[in-house]
Length: 246
Image (cartoon, rainbow, N blue to C red; front, side):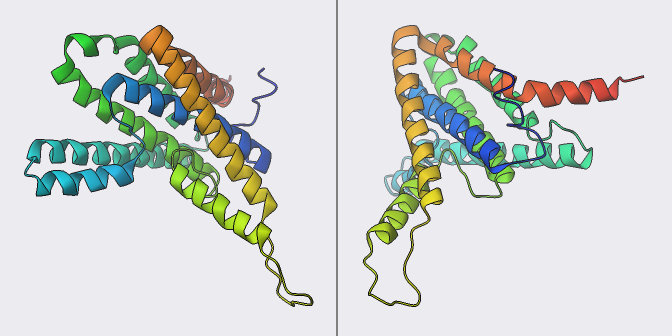
């Protein structure tokens, strides 16, 4: 297993490593989003819906709900900011784990959600808003990781954009070019394949997250956290050995 995931979070990147990491993170995002909805009744990767919700709540005079939606957006933004800070700090210090640091933080946040999630049922008025904020932070954190690693070529929570790009490439694929056209329309099949894989992994993750939460509850997030931790472990261990080498 460690041989298979080697290089997924290293500073030296390859296209294959980017796609594998993006596929796994899309699976985690789908599972967290779906499981989070069953836990708190909110999808936490849907910033478009949250911005619209703010407007709706303001018009209806529901200031508390508008504030809650704004807080969720700020949490998502804060997650992305945290990734940028951790990655840039790691790169400045020439750490092999620069891209793994946000994943370690995401792993810890998922463990908090999974281990302490049972308290939601006991103290719902307090824990549901905090859980929404935590999940939005996780989504922003993760989306920014793969965005920075792949130089904005891959995103894992923005399915709307992925489906849009799939539609564009399918339109190009089905376009009939006139004979002798000097500038024929050509689909980017590799881009189409990557986006289809990401959407498929997000859906598979959502299915797994919903089933896991339905049957075993909050603890279903623990395997996701362990997976993220394993991805970041090897480059982190290299940094630790280098730091304490004689």
